[in-house]
Structure formats: structure tokens, C-alpha cells
Length: 256
Image (cartoon, rainbow, N blue to C red; front, side):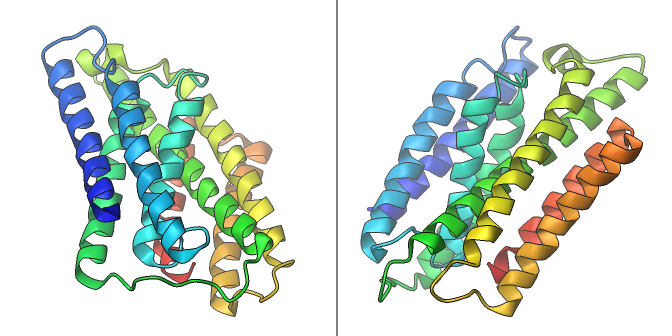
């Protein structure tokens, strides 16, 4: 049943993206109108999947690569619903749904081919749960920052073309995208900092590779924010950096 819930969540996000894209192509004034309700439906199925996997393991369901990908996707959707409107990112759902779909598609294939089954802990460590939850929530924020960066680049290209298309008028003002990107980076860095601090209170310390990967991701984002605070990076360079940093963060998931 858990895999069925994951499949339904994945189909919901794919359907939401397709409907929004078709609506935009047809000239709808609000091509993003279905993003929030469909994201909520997908979130419900994601939560059911994570709940069932949590019951299976007796702990936070992050015991294998597939569950980590779903947890990151869940974090991305949660933060989109919580922050998208506050940050005036009206089309964030349209841009984020393809990423969620791809991450969960990989998770579905993984579980269908090689589900490792239950992995109950010998002792439940609350610091481990906090470390894992905060770190993966941070990845969700970093993912949204990368998506905001993509939106900025699209908006910037439309603006410089002198012949902006329909998408230009649907995207948020370019200054809002740059501001939201920085805020998402700060939120992600703060959450990851909490996760890393929690790791040092765990009963069993993470492996050196795990700490190295987490530290490298934290350092990459800390340097990006420090350089931006010092030199005020141009929005285009900041957007490219946010996209590249998230690609690097995803590459380290194998060690987490």
C-alpha cells in the first residue's frame, strides 16, 4: 500500500504540472490556479507513504535512498505551500512539480526493484531524528531556492528578448524572485545548521563520509551567502550559484 500511495502522489504532481502547462499555453490568466489544490493532494499521499514507512521501521522513514528522495520531495512541497504565496512566487508550483515528479519516479523504481524492507532501530535516538528531519527540510528549501533561480533566469531572458511571451506576464516581478531566492537560502542554511549541531549529540556519531558530505553542503551555502552579503552578487550569478549548489547537494545524498 505504501508504494501505491507514492505512485498516486507522483501522478498527482505530474498531472498538476501538465494541467498548469496546458492552461498556460491556452492563455489562461491564472495558469497556476490548480497548483495549490493539486499540491495538497500530492502532499496527502506523500504523507501517507512516509507514515506507513515510518510504521514499518519504527522511526523516521529515511533508511534508504528512495525514502530520502521522497522526504526531500515532501519537504519541498511543504515549504512551497508555506512560503510560496508569502514570497510572491505565484508559479513556483508549476516549476517545482517536475522536480518532485522526477525525484519520486526514481524512488518508485528503487523500491519496486530493491526495497530493503524494515530496518527497525535497536534504540530510538531523538537527536538522530532531529538531525535527519532538519537536514532534509533544508534540502527542500535549497531545492526551492534553485527553482526560484530557474524562474529568475527565465524571467531575465524574457525581459532581455524585448519580445516577452505569455510566461513573462505570469511570473512574479524579477526583484521578488531575487529576494525570495536569498530568503530561501537563509532558511535552508539555518535548518541545515540545526541538523548538523544535532548530529554531535547523537548516541552514535555519523560516519566520517556522512559528516563530510553534510559539512561540504553547509560550507557551500554558507560561502554563497557570505559572498552575497559581502559583494552583493548580481541576481543572475546568484541564481546560477543556487542552481549549482543544489545540484551539488543532491549529489551528496548518497552519503546521507
